[in-house]
Amino acid sequence: MRSTTLWRLAALLTFLAFAALPALAQQDQSSDPVAEAARKAREKQKNTPPPKKVYTNDDMPSAPSSAPAADSTAKPGDASTAPAADAADDDKAKNPEAYWRKRFQNARDNLAKAEKELDVLQRELDKDQVQYYSDPQKALMQQHDRSDINDHASKITAKQKEIDSLKQQLADMEDELRKAGGDPGWAR
Figure 1 (tube, rainbow, N blue to C red):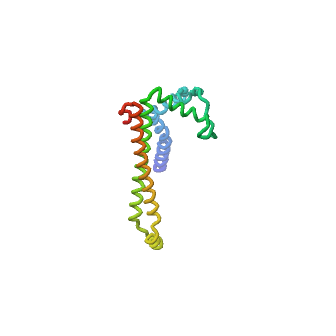
Figure 2 (tube, rainbow, N blue to C red):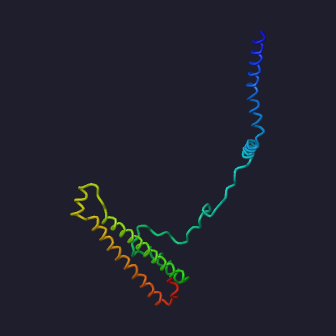
Figure 3 (spheres, one colour):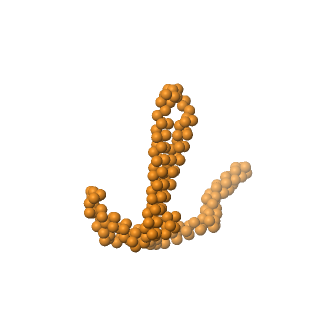
């Protein structure tokens, strides 16, 4: 009889121990400072008002233009394209330095873009000349018909002519600036 009582007592103590574990675990969580901080942060976030709207220049309506909009169907000789030419002349008269600097910067940007495109075309041509074709049909065709290489060569020639033209335009603009009596430093 004594052994059954011991077994019952042991089973009762084990049951009580397992029943007390969830209570102990919850007590450990409540004493965790990180959990407390997270709980407080959630409470604070619920109580804060939403952020206020910040207005920028993009949100503000733009001022109406005083010049009438140009008609998209206008021809180059029409009188409606004259305001654009007059605006350029007004810029030239009001601030000649800014006008000339802008013109030279645009010309230099176009020249730099054309030179980069020429560089890309030359690299593609070099790649095509060393190309290896795993397909024997393609390799045989390229031995007799080098159309892709010829196309790249013609594009390179056209781009070099375009670069020469842009360089000539820059030189002409420098002469035009000198004749207009502007400072040569505006071309830099």
